Image (cartoon, rainbow, N blue to C red; front, top):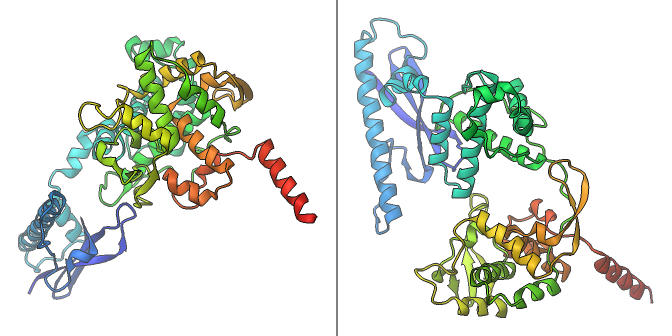
Length: 452
C-alpha cells in the first residue's frame, strides 16, 4: 500500500532556527525522499501524528498568528499527502517505473504549481523587492537595500547586460563593485548618458570605500537569502569563496565629544532657534543613553521604567535578545521632563528624517564653536586628513561619545557593550574608543607607583 511519511530534517535553518520537514514515499520496492520547503519549530512537531501541534493558549496576537501559521502548515502537509497519492495513481500506480526525483517534482508542483514559470517571469529586481519587503530589518536598512537595487539596475543599463540570479558570477560582482565605486566618473560619458536618464542620475556622488563595501554586503545578504532553502530562488551564490568584495578599509582613529564639549553644547543658548534647540537636546539625550538612532526613534513614554531606558537593540536582536537597561542621568531626566508633553506616545520630538537631523547638527555644532580639528580617514581617497568637529556631527557621534567617555573612565568593555547594546565580545566596539595621552599617562603613573 502506497504511503507518505513526514519527518524533520536533522539540520536546522541558519536563518531562524526552524527545521525543514522532509518526506518519504514508499510502495513495494519504490522508496523516494524529498524536501517540502516547509519549516516548523521542532518543539511544535509531533512524530506520531507527523503534524505540527497547534498551541492551546492563544491569548496574544503573536500566539494567534503562530496558531494560524501552524494550521496552514498542516493544511499544506494534507495537500501534499493527497496530491502525491493522486500523482502516484496518475503515473500508473506502481505498474510503470517512476523517474528518479518524481516525489520532489510532485511536491514542488503541489505547493508551487507555477513556481518555475513565476520566477522565470519575475526579474532580478522583482525578487530583490520581495527580499526587502519580507526582511525584518529597519526602514533605514530597507532604504539602503533599495538604493543598491537601483544601482544594479543602472549597472545593467550602462553595461547593456541582463542580470539574473542564475547568471550572476564572480566577474560580474567585481564589475558591479567597480561601477559602484566609479559611477560618478562613468556618468560623464556618452554611453552612460544615452543609457540612463538625467532624472535617475541627478543625485550620483562619489562614494567612499566603506560605502562601496557596505553596498556589496547588502547585495550579498540578498543573494544569501535567495539561496536559502526557505526561498529557493536560485542555487547560484558567487559570493561563496570570493575575497575582497566586502572587505572594508581600516577605520581611522575614533573621535567623540569630551565631557567639556558635551557641557558646552548642552548649555549653549539656542532659545532663538527652537527647532535647533530640540535637535540639540535629542543629541545630548542620545549621548547619555548610547543607543543607535534606529532604536532611539522607537522610544516611547513606556520605554522609561524605574528610572531606566529599556529596549531590545534591533540591529543585534538575532544574536542577543537581552533587554538593554540604561539608568537615566540627571541630564537625560531633565530633557525628558522638558519634553514630557510631546504629542502622542513618542518619547521625544524626533526630526522628520535622519538626513535633516544630521545637517542641523552640523550647523548647531558650528554655531556652538565646536571646531576642534580631528584626525580622520578621507572616505573617498582613504588618506588621513584633518577636519573640524562640526563637519563630523551626526546622530552616530552621540553613540561614539557615550561609549568613548565610559571607556575613558576605566570601565570594562564588556560592561560598556552591555549598556550600548553590542553583542558580547563585539569587535565593532573597538571603533568607538581610543587610548588617548591622558589614559597612557595614568597607566604609566600607576606602574611607577607600583614599583615604590
